[in-house]
Amino acid sequence: GVEAAGQALSALGRTGRTIALPTTAPLPAGAPTRVLWRVPSPEYGHDGPEGALQFVDLQRDAAVSDVLRATGAGLRSVEHVKRYTTIGTAHDQGRTSGVMTSGIVAEALGVDVADLGTTRFRPPAVPVSFAALAGRNRGELFDPVRVTAIHPWHVEQGALFENVGQWKRPWYYPRAGETMEEAVLRECRAARTGVAMMDGSTLGKINVQGPDAGVLLDRLYTNLMSTLKVGRVRYGVMCGVDGMAIDDGTVIRVAEQEFLLTTTTGNAAKILEWMEEWLQTEWPDLRVHLTSVTEHWVTIPLVGPHSRDVLALVAPGLDVSNDAFPFMSWQDTTVAGVAARVCRISFSGELAYEINVPAWYGITVWKALYTAGEAFGITAYGTETMHVLRAEKAYPIIGQDTDGTITPQDLGMSWVVSKKKPDFVGKRSFNRAENQRDDRKQLVGLLPTDERVLLPEGAQIIATSDIPEPPVPMLGHVTSSYRSDALQRTFALALVRSGTRRIGETLYVPLDGRTVPVTVTDPVLFDKEGARRDG
Image: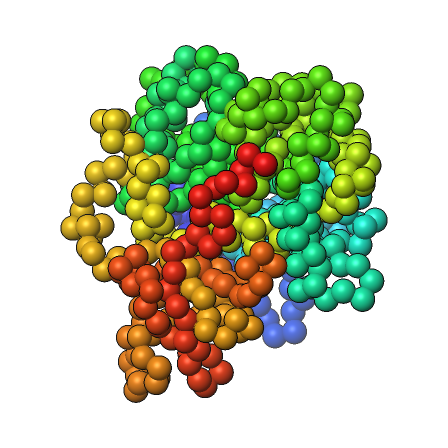
């Protein structure tokens, strides 16, 4: 039949000779039938072993002789024959050869083909199940939960958590009968008037080492880092090639050839990849190594007018006076008997210290600080309070107060862009006509006329008290909005077109079918002079 003709034609193509085709007479009606896995081939003498010209898998160019060689070597499983001969490993995955191979193996071994079965068919011959694509990334493993070393304490204290990146971070610590608003106002009050502490361990931390570490950081940050002295700390901003802010954080100079930089929690992996991309693809000549050490350190911000008193109790060997320990500096010391690195950094505008210890000892140091601070009414605070405190001081959150179209200048931070460096990533884009427009969105503060109204984050801002017919011209949007204990009212941060020029103007936020009048203000709404920073 057709199969025999095909085999003979294949043989003809190899040998170039004329081959006599076997003939098949029609079977009488009712005659018994049997499965024929291959047509007996003519004798070819010296042309090769039996079945050398009878092809089983055309994609792998495998013949009956290959199957017989496998069974002759002692193989009894079709899966073993498959791997011995490569039959069924091409794109069709045995869909055109698998059954035939099993029949020939059964014939050679003298067994029933039903007992042998066929080889497994794999993609692309069969579809891929969603379960296979998901693999282990299902249920709790879909997005692994990360917790800090102090997490058990937060649970014991009844903290409610929010997801930040993959981390579970304490959101706030409600007491019996307290609403979220009441708890956050209480935590804010403690940080502004007494002493408070939070778990800041989730901050991204990247160790940068090598003779050219300063050179790399100068190229990636908008400001100079190579001039930073050992023992000092500097705030820095990174921009994309378009000049838009992508992250910010602090840079600590640990040694002449070593820096430790921090990133926002959610951008830790992104920034490490960003730095590695530039280092490996654009500047491979730089002698620098980058290492993520986020999980290595527990970071505890100790905040408030009495933070110096509490730290002095658990770090008796550390001179915590302003002269000995100035703002934006760090010192290695011992805290609660544990080797620690303490930094004078503040994300609240208050006198504050960031205490860094190896993660193994994090909960020990946390409990020691909490015990020492009980005499001063120490309060643990969460991320919501952190946001209120930093927003009162107009410290932006990259990704919340920015949207990928905001430059440092739009944030009112021209001071962080070096005029001394010849170049850095994003510098050229600052000169684009688009980046020079005087109607760019800029960060400003908003004070609702009704001090009780809390503006929704993301709410749009318009110029008129009446909502016109669509399309409605939008001047900007609310980026952060909170109720402040220090201001005794609600407030917001917003990105507004020509925002700096609009300070003092009244704009409007559509809300529930009406418009809420708001006054545009300077974004720094609390302690504009920074007098509270040194206690």
